[in-house]
Structure formats: structure tokens, C-alpha cells
Image (tube, rainbow, N blue to C red; front, side, top):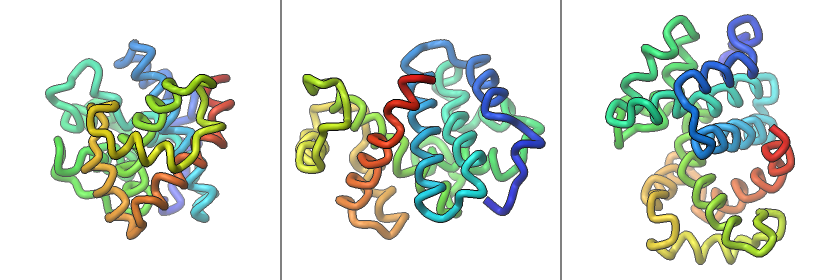
Length: 193
């Protein structure tokens, strides 16, 4: 994003250590690693490969304040990320737009984060229900069925996912299909991290 040299500021390992300073629950750490890997995937797929490290770090840190400060989600993050590039802080805070933040996602990377944050949770929950416990054999048709079932993974907002697709100018099916493809591509990497 804008050619930010994140290597000079924060490595992935440093970002993960910063995340773990405020997040200890396996669920939150797993979610952060998943979103980070999906963000890296989309950076490359959408032609932002030079900024893939930045996209990944934003994905890793997007919920930095959620575990310890759930009532201040996206409001406490700027304090916890103080000293890091404004672009990173803006991106992190913008993923809660309309929910817990008034910072609108403007860059395509921020719109991807807004769209995939909830969706990766829904896809992950759907994968756990499969005999394989994997996304590798999940079809779009199956995911769409889970998406329509409001009782399944009720904490994953379908409205936010649909808004995310709209912000990107994508059909909902495209967002579901491409995010499912991203999760297939990164599943082994996430398991190994």
C-alpha cells in the first residue's frame, strides 16, 4: 500500500509477538494467522505483491485490541500500535467501520480486510463441521448453504460480509468463492504456523 517499507518498521515475527502481548487465546491467535495469510494471498492475486508483507501484517494485527479491550475494539488499537505507520493503524481501525469505528476502509486492502474478517470465521467454522475438518474439499454450494443459515456460526455477521462484497464492487458469490480459494491455498501454511 503506497510502497510502505514495513521491513524497516516491523517484521511478521515482531508483529506476531506484538499481537501475543495482548492476545493469548488460541482462537484469537488462529484467527489472526488465518486473516494474515488470506490477506497475503489477496495482495498477490490482486497485483499488490510488492506490498504483501504489509497486507499480511495488517491482517495479523487487525484484532490486536479485541481480546483485552472488547468494549474498545478498534478504539484502543491506535494506542497499542503507536509508532507504527499511519497506514497500518488506519487499516486496522477501518475493519470495524460502522460497527465500532467511524474510520472508513478506502484502500482496496482495507476493503478486503473488512470483507474477509468475518468470512474467514464462517468458512473456518464450516470446515470444522466437515469430516475432513478442511476447506480443501469444501464447495461453494456448501459454503453458500452455511452462509444462508443464520443460526450457523451466528457470530459471523452476514451483513458485514455482504457489505464487504459491495464495497469491493464484487458479487457476493465472487467474494465467497475467492475467499474459499484463498483459504484452500493457505490452509497448510496456517496449520504449520
